[in-house]
Length: 102
Length: 182
Image (cartoon, one colour):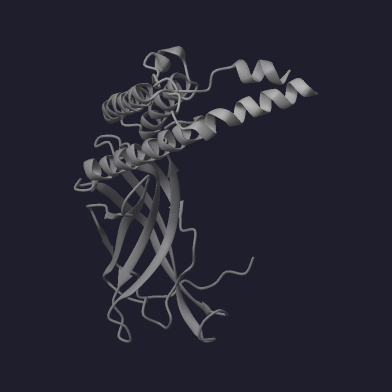
């Protein structure tokens, strides 16, 4: 069961985070402008609030879960460089030997 | 922005800020509006009695009875804009007596909600509250000014107090109405 949950990707890379922020700010600002104009025309502030809340839920759906579009720029780490010092090299070998003895 | 919770936090904070800005915009678009409306007040009957005022000075005080009509076309100039929840209308009487320069008595009030019929057309209304003077200042007082005013209860911002344009000045008779026994 736990392995299923661990296989679900929850990660969002840096460019994805920036994209998510831009997307929710854009959606909420656009819905705010639309709601303000609509509320001003029909003279009903409740509709302004409803339209902003609709934009809020829409941007929640779009940016809260880490959709695959936010994982298009993964970080590539450098491969581990083998360290030249002698002691560090020998230790894993000793461990291996011990395991063999057992 | 790296976890679901931090994204939810910034999303919520941003939405709240935007909502606050919108509310301020709603206030600023209606703040400098002239909400006064012509009001027509007619008084068909005005009598006074001299009765015991058990709440006040424990002496016989003047009690006025007024039957009035109010016509106010609030629809003609839309008072219910998007920053108004309800109106609190009240009819007040102002007059001067020997003991006080300014007396104000609220005679009648009414709450008009959003969506109600805003065209006031009231006929033969009796006052809701007692029109007691704190003495004998009502008898043969020739200048009682009736004014319809209203508080605008807003969504955001200040609570304006609007006076309807159109006052009614009425005289009270010189003689007391004798109390009838029922």
